[in-house]
Length: 268
Image (cartoon, rainbow, N blue to C red; front, side, top):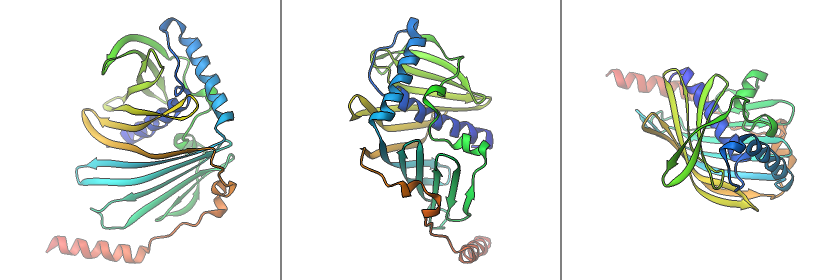
């Protein structure tokens, strides 16, 4: 996928996570009450911030490429407007070992740690792109609107249309529960479709889909499966302190030597 497609992919993931926050409590939706639905969703998001003081979501991710399958473990920590994302990626085709990335939003700045590149402060522009969650009051543009009704796997849905960050989105919102069941994001020639399923209650009326599938056109690209969700477990503030991060680094000299050896073997 080219850079524009990757940017759209990242914007799409942020959008999915955002709507999981604001449309995760069950309530009926009506097309003629769309502004009221949004206000209700925003109020529920604020209430969830009070009720859910901290949360940990652990997921497995599987991405299919032309070179083979890439697997990863993804853990998200949230507390008091701060977040920490840890991802360990396994790329057996590259024979480079596991690559680990940690992204911390400490409430003021965003920091990235990578096993190859080390620690760096993320620019404000990149931080906005990489933000896991947007503010409850800023999650959807004013141009969002209901454009039609459709059925998805037997569920009666409204189709919501919006444009954000130069990316166009369609969302299928179940009328009886306001669950987001599927969506698509497109920009010029790039198009990503996603489907949410296996909804389970986390705390009170807050629900979360334990499976998310992302498609490049009709081709399954990534599947994210939730292993566990813990709410109000009492997270330490140290998790969100960038000075407390210990990141194992990869030996670049050994890595380069291995790459040269593999290149020589390929030319024989």
